[in-house]
Length: 360
Ligand code: IPM
Ligand code: MN
Image 1 (cartoon, rainbow, N blue to C red):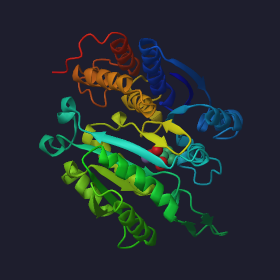
Image 2 (spheres, rainbow, N blue to C red; image 1 turned 60 degrees about the vertical axis):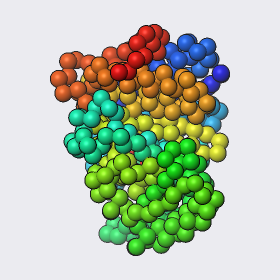
Image 3 (tube, rainbow, N blue to C red; image 1 turned 135 degrees about the vertical axis):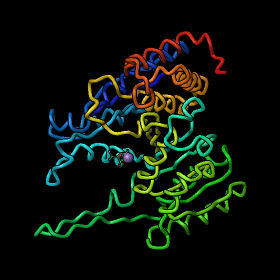
């Protein structure tokens, strides 16, 4: 298969983890005779430094002309504590999601057998957890009208959703559940928010088309608690933009590290693959960032194009690295100098030469 892939490494640890994902994809291309072409472009704080724009025109054009986008991370501390900054790295990512119509962000969460004792949660609670979070990505409070009064004392962010915005992601969530454990949990705050009541109404209606899927509802505060108390009860979680952002960071604790969580952001035309973690500026250049989230995002890219054997091999390589404790310090207590690059090289070598695929 021929694929043009835009690589947007971004800020902080973005470039170093994305490099490892590209290595894995190149190994896959070579082993399975695919033709993957990679083109790199700037986004985020680095793009502000170079072009005074977190999403330069060339970057957006490139993304629109490629088959898929591999995204690193964005953010820089100099903007975090400067509420008056008018141009911010995050705007680059949000604009990209909006312009490309990437309305569904899919975030798989699972407890790896080999990492059960790395999570701060008890083993018997997390063992067997397998959740797929469907987070709406181009609507809600992230994109509603923002206001700051002239005297700077009152601010507001509008949270708005239309029926059509809810329907399109709900269909994807139900279809996913049909291929999983046949359950969708809608996470909302319908006891307080009008938008949540619309979500309930629309999703209940759509559920009628998916008779083999059970739909249930949880208020987001309760869902946050249930995620820690009994994560195994979840199959597909469907939720709006901000609740999905928060719940997915919380869910990453189950796997033992946020450095393991990948995601796919899809729309009707484009698809982007990105780790759920941020730019982790404190770790930049130290070789301690976990590249697995980025590498698993590359596996989701392969799956998106129907390259299931290829994706499985990447997943297997990742599992093998975890099993052998070839891992960065976030999950490797002993930390025997396993760097970002070493994890990437192990996974690359395994793809070229998957001699021992027996995981037991
Ligand atoms: C994420 C990130 C982004 C978000 C930020 C960087 C804008 O936290 O992808 O989860 O809030 O969506
Ligand atoms: Mn987030």
